[in-house]
Length: 342
Ligand SMILES: [Zn+2]
Ligand SMILES: [Zn+2]
Image 1 (cartoon, rainbow, N blue to C red):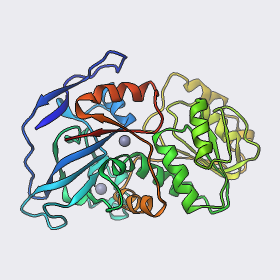
Image 2 (image 1 turned 180 degrees about the horizontal axis):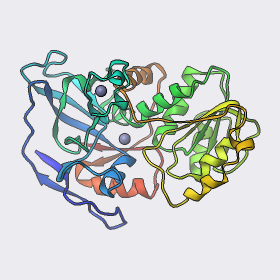
Image 3 (image 1 turned 30 degrees about the horizontal axis):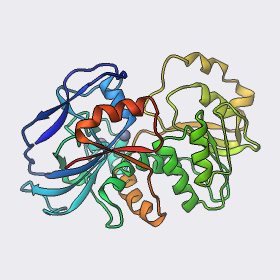
Image 4 (image 1 turned 90 degrees about the horizontal axis):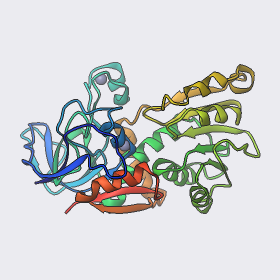
């Protein structure tokens, strides 16, 4: 099979080619695993973190990719959940222990033995991959393969973020940063909490216009003041400065949900500006989102159909994965990037 292989960690720069197209042995499914013929795989910011060493793969070489859609072409001897021909999606969570209190409660994302697709096992930047039968999800018929791909990470995490925000219908929602995840959250929020006004904080004027076209009531720069205080804000930026600004925009009892796998250290000093009376007093809180549990992915796939969510997508060939990553890093194009795999 063809695969885009990461052999060595490096910075993703304009001319970098961190991934190499290789002829690679097709993986064999273990007893609990299915073998998927991958047709589409989303490109995620976390892949930049893997390549650049902030969330490094547990071993190299590694096939990245954790938003994969494909058909089952072989099943391990103990597979009961799926059969050959089923169309399945795979997200960031590849396995967990299954026994700890977090796993028992359905929060496998908090398990100490959490393993990630494309980091701890090979992922979907390839013509085929294997995955544990319990960590693959049927894709609703209404979604095409390329439409489903970005829903598996950006969308599912966005869904978890919105859930953790605790927002009730009619309460005001803010979104800081407007990339792959936020543009899906906005569409989901319009469906789930239709009476809530949505405020967008984004640096890029093109992203602000895009947000308004999707139904946001206001769009400003990341440090701008919205016309009213907000009940919850979901942050998807990699930096600290917007966090401090967001706390000031929260209403009493408001909650900031940080949906980011990491924050850059460069502007950590911004945190020193956290001022207790204006940023935290009146029961304001800060909560992080640690990627996704299985229910986030499976529930969101169906919700996306119900809500008529149409992800903005740009397609790339598997062999063009490096270009997709560079464009993602330089934020050249809005929406989600997806590898179309023959
Ligand atoms: Zn991701
Ligand atoms: Zn566990």
